[in-house]
Image 1 (spheres, one colour):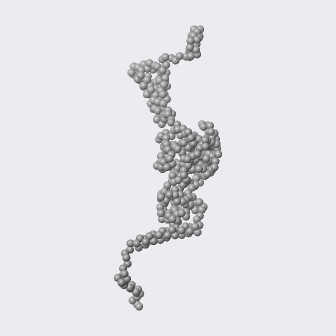
Image 2: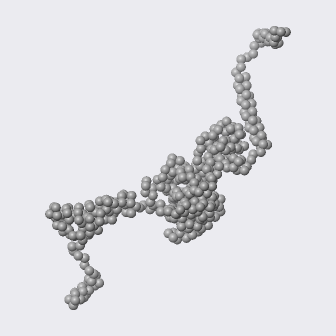
Image 3: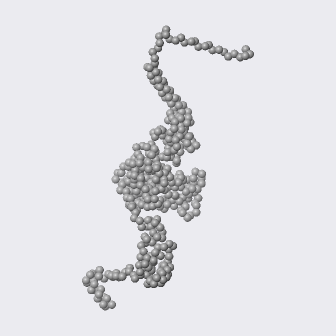
Length: 442
């Protein structure tokens, strides 16, 4: 002990505290096991199904004895297996997908301003609500979030499965100015970042992105990483909103009795987003989402008109013919006075599946009007207005016919042959007098 203390004192005087540190062993991580035996141990450790160290040791001892190699002890086999890289073990035992999730480098997109990047995704909600037939069903939630501020630009709740239509409708709501004065997030994003689902990679969405001058970016197929912000919002909805809603049923729990309708759930979710989530300080940014989006006097880029946005984002139905009693669609009848001038012509209709009270009518890519279904909208068109529209259309057509007739008479009269003198005109035979039909018994 005395000599050890003297040695420590000498090292301290020569090197300071560094001299008192324990020196690593020069033979650390080395062994006398032949390289082929090391490869055998590592290969057995990477095989599936996974084997215990004891099982690997027994098999290695048998092979070493048979080939007259030095027989390694259990501790040596354990040390060789323990030195294997965790990524190598994960790739061999759990596959490439798990390896990518744990060890692949992630390119994390960072937005430097509001509306620079928007993310979109869908998720089923763990809550039972009553559908239109008063049956229990779980709805889907489509959300579009601003990457910079974490504010929600738009969302859609419905029973329909994720599709390009649901994405387009949610994007329309996100871009348009909101009717709620407390919800300010709007505008056209510079980049729209989504996963590689078929609803996002559709031709319709590509055309929408091109028309809006927005860059459409997809994550790699089967690798929805780098979009943790929207996944975190889904967790927030589950933890702070759905758990307080009647009918909440997390995975593994028995079905709950539905109490709310879809419209009631939508109203409550709207209040949660606008009144709570947007004003709650975000743990990562340190600022409430709406305050961060509004900071710096940001002015969003908006479409020229609501009709232009509808033309881009609303679904395009099959062509419909304008009948005398209006347009027939989904078993309903839609009417507007503007259609009086297009009876018999083919038009394109666009509609919101969540609100079939009215449809938008386009003729040769030009917006005509919004036709209303009286049964759904509660609006009626009076007979007097209808007769006035019909008469106006008839007068317009009659005036067009008269103009054409005048033009024809003018052109034909200018090129007609000169009339012959009265003496040289051919004598026109008189027309035979009509004869009455007589019957045999007369």
